[in-house]
Image 1 (cartoon, rainbow, N blue to C red):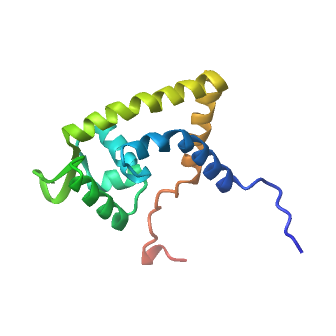
Image 2 (tube, helix red, strand yellow; image 1 turned 60 degrees about the horizontal axis):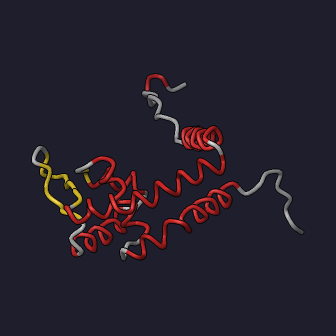
Length: 156
């Protein structure tokens, strides 16, 4: 017997939307021998400059073990450099090389053109509404901040 759901499959819809958008971006990425993950790293660096590894992982949505391999390939291809944070030697900072920065600039042109097409097609108000709804959904689904743990004296 099939289970009836009252709501559409939101995770699947979000994945379909991502794939629909990426279908326009991937050919440009492949033309420059970049994976989706490598592009996400370059996009973070393009937006923020030199960034600590943990922040890259969070903003590019790449788990630590995968990020290690992605960064090694990017370093080999001379797209990034890695160095120790001068203020905290435990941290590693990543920065796009001049070659990586040129690639971000080149790819951003076609990606921004696609966003402009979406804006014309959907209308600016709808696109802004979509961004706002996604931001709201992300905020809604974030774990609540940890509350103070009761001390033994406070236990009932």
